Structure formats: C-alpha cells, structure tokens
Amino acid sequence: MNLLPEIRFKINSWLESGTGRSSAMLARLAGLPYSTTRRVVQGESISTCVNLANILSVVLENNDAHLLGSLLKEQFPNETSVIETFISKGLISDDSRQKLNRFINDDPISSVIYAICNSDIGVSADEIENEYGRAGMRALDNLINAELVEQAGGKFKTSTDKKVNFTVQSFKNALKGHVDNMLFENLEENLAFGYIQWGTISKEAYCQALVALKKNMQEIESLITNNPGNIPIYFLSLGNSYVDLKSFTEREKRKNEKN
Picture 1: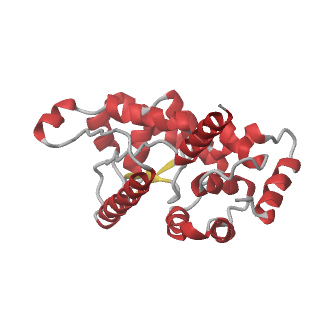
Picture 2: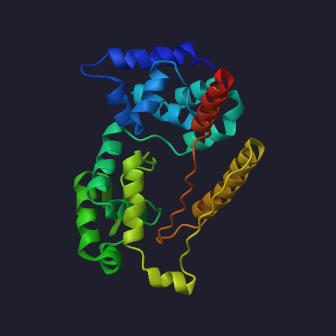
Picture 3: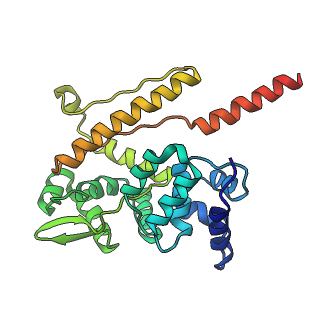
C-alpha cells in the first residue's frame, strides 16, 4: 500500500517548513519510535492507522480533526470504525502532549493524578492527599503549573477534554506509576486484579483475537463513559505489532528461499 500523495505532501511540507524539523523531531512530537516514523517518511512502510494518525496530528498543525479523519479513511478504507474511534477521542496540542509525557517520565504518579482529574466530576485536593499523600499533591501542583489541570468549583479537572497520546517510555512509566501506588492487599479482597496470557497462534486466530479485544474494549469504554465517578481505572492491552510480525515472517521466508 502506497502513502496517499496528499498525506505525503502534508508530511513533506511540515518537514520543510521549519528550522530543525526532521524525522526524529516528528517522531518525538507524535510519540512514536523513530524507526516507525522514519519508515513512514521514507515510504518504506505505512505502519498502522493509529501510528499514521499520530503523525498526521503533528503535521496538520491546526489540529483539523475532520481532515485527519478523511485522510485516514481514504488511506485505510477497511478500518473506518477504528479511525472513528480514534478521532472521537480528540487531539491534543504537541505542547501539552510533551508536557505530560515529561512529567510522567520524571514522576510516574503524575499519570495517576492526571487520570483522576480527567473525569467529569473532578477530584478534590483532600481526596488526592488522603489517597496519595505529599507525592500526589506534588504531582497535582506540577500539572496545575503546566496548565494541564485546573481548579473549578473546588474540584480539579484536566484542562482539556482531549486525550493524550503517550510516548512508549511514558506509557511504561505511567503503568509503573499506577502499580507502585496500588494497594496490593486489595488484590486479596477482589478490589483489583491482574491477568496475563500468552502463547503462539495462527494468523487467522490472531485476527480473531484482535476482534475479540476490540469488542471487549468497546464494552469497557461504554461502562466508563456512562458511569462517571472518581475511582481511577486502568485497562492495559499490550500486544505485538502484526506489522512487525509480518515483516519478520517475510524476511524468514526470503532466507529460506535463498537457501
């Protein structure tokens, strides 16, 4: 699949329109690995629609969600539902994305506090202090000073209703921040849970697993959307990229053919 000429034009225009702009800068702003971004820029690989969406959210500097959605749907006509889900989450400015990622890298509990504030009803300073102590209050102050969180009616809420795309490192640190502050005795009281399952399966079963995961994610998202509250909830789905898996199997196939 070739990159649409209009998308290639947008990417090239962004790279050429500012001092110091490069594939490395684009990768950093998009929250993606450099290798992934470089392959897209050089036309070696389209990557996934979500990765390309993150790149476009940077190069479309006016944060035009309508144009972003139309370009993605034209590039990935078979993934319309996934694209609409991504677009419905909204975009966030590069500046805010970098700020939050930086805080999470320096102090992982920032991700926990940001998540609590990112609810319709918000959270009070007393609730944060009682649950997370001085570390939580310090993270709250940092988020307020960075204008990522604001106070309204005695409650603290995120300053935007747009979601943040974590970098890979921030993603890992955010998970660490939650785990480090989890009361593990709750695991014995059915107030928390942990689950992991792994193995090897066929390509057909792999695709079926993605469909099952998507259905589960939609059900959980519906619960979160329709039941506002201030109890933070984290569901993490971390799987191998089938794009990379496909590349690996093709390389192995070529090796075998040469032999």
